[in-house]
Length: 154
Ligand SMILES: CC(C)(COP(=O)(O)OP(=O)(O)OC[C@H]1O[C@@H](n2cnc3c(N)ncnc32)[C@H](O)[C@@H]1OP(=O)(O)O)[C@@H](O)C(=O)NCCC(=O)NCCS
Image (cartoon, rainbow, N blue to C red; front, side, top):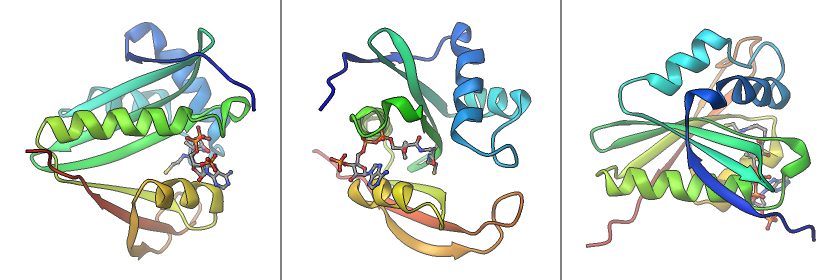
């Protein structure tokens, strides 16, 4: 297996254009965010964005939101060339760690029902399907509404 030197960094404004390009590489045009929407999600109250570097280049990112004890994964994007190497896991683990440290007890997200690899990623990380959201995405694709309880270390 190819090994990469992975590092996480907090989001900085200089990352924005690269994250926008990664989002468009990861999602079809109907689903990928506009610059305005991506910027709004990154800077929303309670939002946190982490950037993953592989061998010094940005390979992916995650955006989460917190409202009280509730967390939400807005998006997680890893460039295809860097997948199955643990980048997504590293981003999600650190995001969940920070959410839990800030008092979050439950994390939710939506994911497309017809993307088996992504559903497998969430299930591997302990998310379970709570409900089906018919026609959730622009273009009409359905989403699973998924949830995970975060363990409290007292
Ligand atoms: C989902 C995504 C973030 C995963 O990133 P990644 O860096 O490849 O994930 P990891 O390498 O940490 O994978 C961890 C585990 O998830 C599961 N998994 C990930 N990709 C998978 C695939 N293509 N097929 C089956 N299982 C998969 C596996 O269990 C994997 O563990 P393993 O490699 O030891 O078998 C990435 O595929 C992606 O960016 N997809 C496009 C954007 C997207 O759909 N994001 C989710 C929006 S809700």
